[in-house]
Image 1 (cartoon, rainbow over the protein chains, first blue to last red):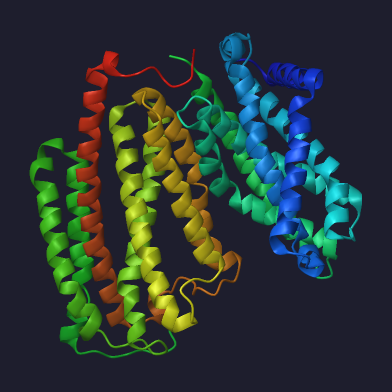
Image 2: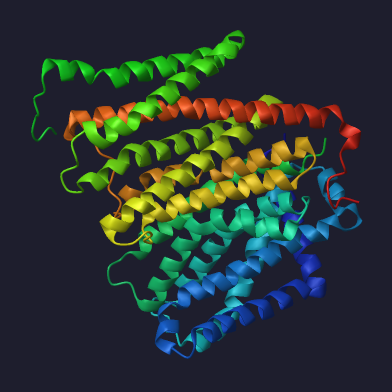
Length: 230
Length: 266
């Protein structure tokens, strides 16, 4: 068993590899951007031209757009490993398998975060939202929310990529597990949009952070069991 | 915090101990069943007899013997089924967590079969409990379903474990299925304490857990009686489902070449 610095170095290498693959084509991020823009548009079409309703529920639609895109993004992050036995290569790297989890999950979080930041201005324009509590706070919250999606998402994507009917299985497993952290993300984002006179933001962010700690801890411990081959 | 005390005749007082004695008996039988493999031929039958026998008497106790609830009247009587059903679901799902953890620590088909059995029986009891809760909510809250924290977390829990059961159906390789579903079972278990504490954390519309010292002892006794009956049935259900799962595992492991390769891997 290697020490902590070695795990982090391994995780960094996996992260660098994933981001490099993505950077060379930029196919995944481009597709995700258009997919989540289409989702955001669909919500406003489905509800009709009621701008008051859209503004009130903007945080929920925004996170649903990110969540829908996350399933595609997470599935893709393990589909690239099924080509040319890449997963076997990943298993053979002389590092702790938990480093693979950290690298992949962090890479997925970064990808989702970039997506959410790129889509943000369009969402603000579409739903006529004003950000009352500061953009830096919102960016931090978005990153925390994306971390909360990516930890269980990476574990479940690794499982689903090897199972039958993987496209059905991933959302079926992932969405219900994400509901508590999704609820916290939506409430906190709503407070940042609408203003926070009752100072509730702190407790929702606390809930989101504690789910993050729980899911990252579980993923870190359990991930080696999933990719080990015997 | 005892606000008032009801006095009952000494005969009734003695009767109030009966559920606790039956509970001790059921727990003892479950204990024997778990720790003595040779006794398993008869322990589950004894539990089945006790469970069915008590369940037959349960409607009489819950519907006529116990006085109606002060605010809800006769509608409140559903709690003698609804509450123990949800308790049993939580016990079964906690057992699933234990079995999943045990499998990851030491691979064994026993813990895998137990995980499969407990998840399925837990979802069954949970679904019945939630349905009964919805039936009660219509006359009491005016709607079958409200987006209340307790109800929402209960629904999430059922969906999470339905996903778990679906995952088990989707993977053919028994060893991979066991490992992966154990991991998913541990992730899913995060929601069990969330369900239990949701009524306290979110000041839900659903009442918080009552404390025996503030409830009429007759009601507590009937609730304990019902819980004991369902506990006996829960143990029998899980054991029977476990036998089916074990037989299935043995069949799968005996014919490894008959199994198709795990989907997708080249």
